Image (cartoon, rainbow, N blue to C red):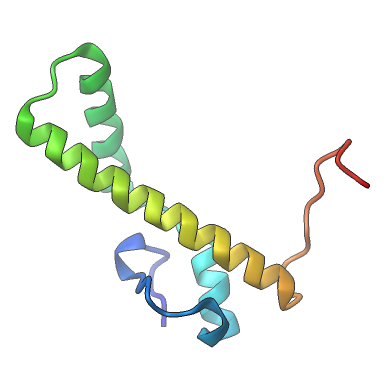
Length: 97
């Protein structure tokens, strides 16, 4: 089961179709933990200022990978939630065909 809406609790190898409805919804609501989000923001600011150390660059890459993996997992969960009828689709105005 997914706990606390935290990216660190996500097991990426689990196929979305194998998850319970509750786990799919929990994944669809995932967010980067507050502390990790603050650190990522600080590292990105340092990068823009050109003051990022080698160790910080490595940390930034790790956090960015975690963030990107979480976004992909979240997108897959949203798609699965819509497929199961757990969430409604949201259409962008002007994209109807």
